[in-house]
Image (cartoon, rainbow, N blue to C red; front, side, top):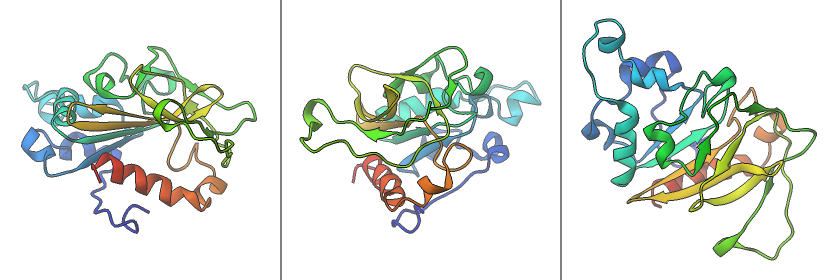
Length: 209
């Protein structure tokens, strides 16, 4: 999807993150955008030298915060191991990553299933638009979040932010409270003609394009 939109993508599977995710600011600077999706905080906090050998290593959550302030683009997408996550196992509440996101994260389990509702675009402030709201395909779950005062909420689900953005220092951040793929993204959402454009444009914005 992102490759078709002209983005060069490096994908790390969840079990590769502890070893292969950048450990220095210089390594992170090779990328314009980082997307965290279904990867818990401990995968970033516990590289093998910490978990297996008891040696010190950089705190990669604080590294991401510094990288964003310097101009990086960070996106977190919802799922069982995003934001606070199912049974609070993702555990990004009260971390350096939460500090730069456009949302705050509840300290307890935050997953929810919409009660038959649908996510919809919602514009306010400088982005207010006179056209009526347009509904898109239903989602199967989302993380309960609260928008920061300086965030721009672009879409809501059941009165909570579904898609929100924020400028932080020289960088930008984006929170999407549901999945960008199964299990919470149903097939009709992924088949929606706007799906590729939505996330392709999100990455372009995060990269400063």
